[in-house]
Image 1 (cartoon, rainbow, N blue to C red):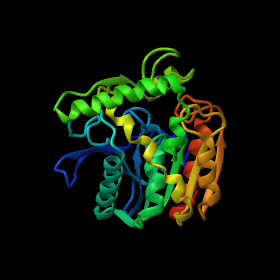
Image 2: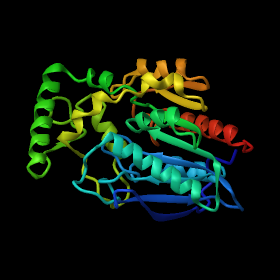
Image 3: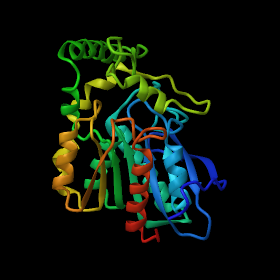
Image 4: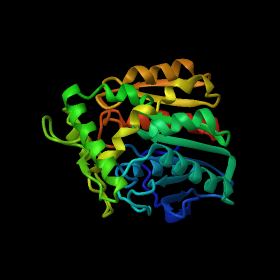
Length: 308
């Protein structure tokens, strides 16, 4: 395992990955030192977030440990193409992961037999589903994952949920007539109008705000909310046959803990860690970051056959 304080410059290039729709994913591609083929990690962020909003500290450390790393923006988000902007579509984002995995598998310096998927928060939904279905993966890391969209919807107060769904339906109807999306702020103070008004929502916004100048607006097309409850990869946990590390926060206001614990119980080769603090404490600056990063590095290196 490398020195966690190692600040040796890394090679990061921006690449464009074609998709079947004709749109392109923008990804940051980190290449480790030495000759390949290298194991690889494909990374994606959570609801309303982009790769520049907190993925770099993880990607850089993984790269220093010997992994090629791809941190992607989903279509319609960040540096990737696609319209309308800032709309969440679960099957589309899952396909984006799949396309990035395919790109990695075809890259000459990457070992196609040692590709791992990593996802945080809402991306944990994609990673859990892929762990149960994508035979190209050697393992997966799901960090504070939302693995049951229906259970996630129950975290919202009923009165607020009704208002959000009403706006979402109006936005979906408007889309049928070619109208621009109705946008909702993602993170707001308690009592304000937006998707998440939990006590830690603004702390979360701070943690995922990009440190670079990128296309990011802390907003979400309201129509995005309609399909989330239908996606419940927790129900496929028993089909997961690859190693999967689940990082589950002690107190999580954004992703229900119980479904994630069920994944850990049902997946044949699951490893579980209960991280300190809340949903956003796993990011750099949070109370759980150092420990979580250490555990993820150890897990990835062990299953990739790298010395730690």
